Amino acid sequence: MKSALVTGANKGIGLEVAKLLAQHGFFVYIGSRNLENGQAAVAKLQAAGLTNLEAVQLDVTQPDSIRAARAAIGAKTPVLDVLVNNAGISGDLAQSARETTLEQYQTVFATNVFGVAGVTQAFLDLLEQSPQPRIVNVSSAMASLTLFADFENANSAYRVPVYQASKTALNMYTLNLAYELRGTPFKVNAVCPGYTQTDFTGHQGTSTVEEAGQRILKYALLGPNGPTGKYFSEEYFPAPATCPW
Picture 1: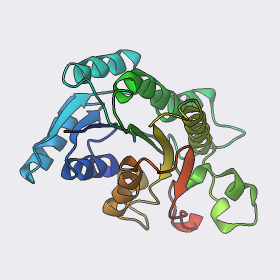
Picture 2 (picture 1 turned 60 degrees about the vertical axis):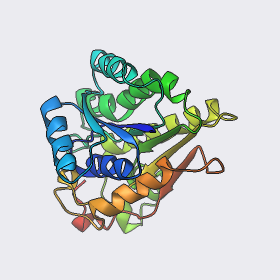
Picture 3 (picture 1 turned 45 degrees about the vertical axis):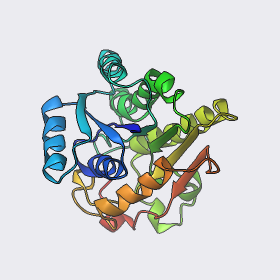
Picture 4 (picture 1 turned 180 degrees about the vertical axis):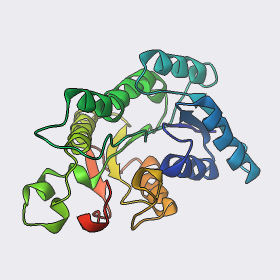
């Protein structure tokens, strides 16, 4: 049985991705900052008939937690086939490039960038044992330099510079990781799941959780001829009047 780790998977898009991977025959480790919340998510999926899941305490901002999760999963399997770096935060939405504090940047980057790098590096040795390792970093169309350089575009009017900077940095990390792993079986990509109706967006959005999950799943299941080092977005976010993030 193939195995997968999804971070931030106790609810929302992460939980949906975990469910889909389990339905596709993976044994899925649900990474959750709060273990009880992760266990509740597992129980929910088990009640729906999925038994190939396990919760793992994983706070991506804490190196000790990452190391403990790596040890726990490594004790159960010598191979990890898929890593979905889903855990992410927006920070205080009242963000300004002129006024937002350094502490706010540090908080958001700790999860969205440093956490992704830390988790990926910790599990890279298990992924290397897979014949077709896949890494999917959950990004956002809000990270687009091209879109937000167009000041006349209505969709570029809503700006959250801390969150956006973190996701742009995540995209660059994705590119560099894919570059270093070129010529290997790895496929490393960044995927925007769309403007999705979850707690993260105040349950507003143009995409359902199910649609968002499918968009990420697609790149977790790439075949040997699939792309790597790419950013994929099947849906731009809507105009700022309806976009709270």
